[in-house]
Image (cartoon, rainbow, N blue to C red; front, side, top):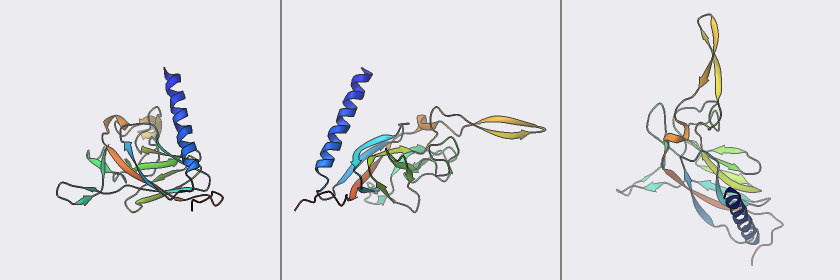
Length: 194
């Protein structure tokens, strides 16, 4: 059953890659993908960039019932505040047990599936550019499951090894973020449609 699912997933990716390669010369099209806050693995977008292509990634504001445009909150739990973070993260800086230590806890992370270079939204960086080749992937900056981190602290005259953990990881998250992806450039060798 698992093999069948993996084969179907691989075939789907190949078909999408072939279709995108065939359409590489067409004008840029904005695609919206949904990123789940609770999923603890990199989530594929289905958007594959070819060599020389780039994509602009943004998170649009949403309209409230009163018609006001506000930033998307997406259900990442801030352990210090117990509130929901916006897609650019909470006020806390992520520790070593997080996907991207040093970035904001709860921030939406973006990477290219081949280069694995991780980029993050911040309070001032609201647009990210990703370069091909590779598929665009997303994850929340939360405690990465399956990893244990320790630090040493002084307990009187002894140095003690203590396990570091800030909260429930992905298990206490909920919600989603709607993310816009727009191809912005293409390979110079790719023929353009007239």
